Image (cartoon, rainbow, N blue to C red; front, side, top):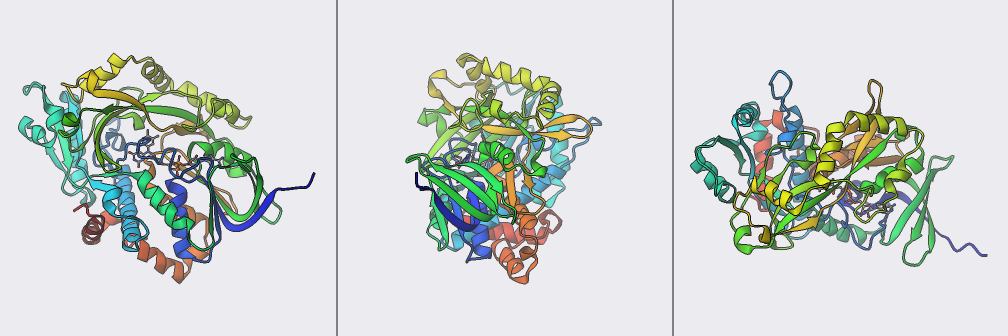
Length: 497
Ligand SMILES: Cc1cc2nc3c(=O)[nH]c(=O)nc-3n(C[C@H](O)[C@H](O)[C@H](O)COP(=O)(O)OP(=O)(O)OC[C@H]3O[C@@H](n4cnc5c(N)ncnc54)[C@H](O)[C@@H]3O)c2cc1C
């Protein structure tokens, strides 16, 4: 039989057409326009997994309202370090998106970003006291300037009328409000970025193409085996650098790449669901994102929130996410994803992580067993007058939490993102999903810094980085004047003033 395999050569292969690959591809092309890039995506469209607007919460994570980024230490203190770093990362993303708008790379900003106040809301003495201390710890920092705190019922009603309706004004409540919060349609943004990228010289984009295997050759380049899912046609792509941005599909590909740095990693899938409001009168009454406190054992990304969203030009109202368990790593994945990912080098970390996270397991079992009535009761904690007939259940995206080997504990479940890079800098992979799409730009700059070590130091690349991200190399929280200037400029361009 003649060998009909198609062969191609490139400088960079991006696996997966989500926001991470889009961001990396565009930054690299801006840094080095003659770069040859191939993109492979198993589905027939870009951003159809976690990056799609209906699959994530669309929160421009700036740590303004998400209480899980400011946990309370045993001594009662609240360290805002992680929150500051997330807020700074989001400022980096906004600068890059503003650059894309200015260069006409993406369409009108109103199609993908909107200013929506970010509110934290709690009730009961203990939580009210925590929120006050959190506010004191955060408001001292320039990056959180403008944050307001209130326990006044009338003020809370003004901020979030729908949430306060039907409550007893003599109960104890507290809220913080950040007017400059955002809602982002990451799907729209990603598809826009790929549309531009795909028509650039030197870039080829292949939908319905699944990466099956990858292997490093002796000369350090990579051979990637790909199948066209529509025709069965096989391809072999040869490249100097691979980025595995396959979302939930990244772990199996990392295992196949067989790099030393990738040994011992496992994944734990957590699925999600939303309650979506179908009553336009109710949707019209909510204008913010209101985040509460997670229940005991809940993974950080399952903090309940009631969100005003703008999706494809229509105002929406979503509550959730409700967590669940599925052995799939992708929403469009297979039930054998989890079992097939278990290998001799990750089975021990996975078992230990499972044993150490019993409250999480219990929480997930409770979530899976929830009846429609239980879900409406959970919603009524945030919207006391909610009527069951106004809400329908929708499936959200799938996340794969990282399990990694740990010297002390044997195995650890992580809730953040993890960039793993081969020692020679020829392969990089992104695992995990929080804070996710909001911090895509900082994460991809990290990938470039680790893998293009020499190029990134050159005056040409440094100058281009500063053109795309004016605060490149600076910590905005430590430079309030620069922070003000950049916030003003990006808000003007992104029309979120
Ligand atoms: C319920 C939920 C809520 C979230 N809320 C937020 C939020 O409010 N704010 C925020 O910033 N982030 C949020 N996130 C996280 C955010 O959505 C993700 O971090 C981000 O979208 C990940 O982008 P990605 O490009 O890595 O992956 P994805 O968008 O999942 O893209 C990966 C792509 O790779 C493809 N692929 C997989 N395997 C292969 C293969 N073998 N060959 C070829 N292609 C392959 C997939 O089909 C997919 O298109 C949320 C996520 C979830 C699930």
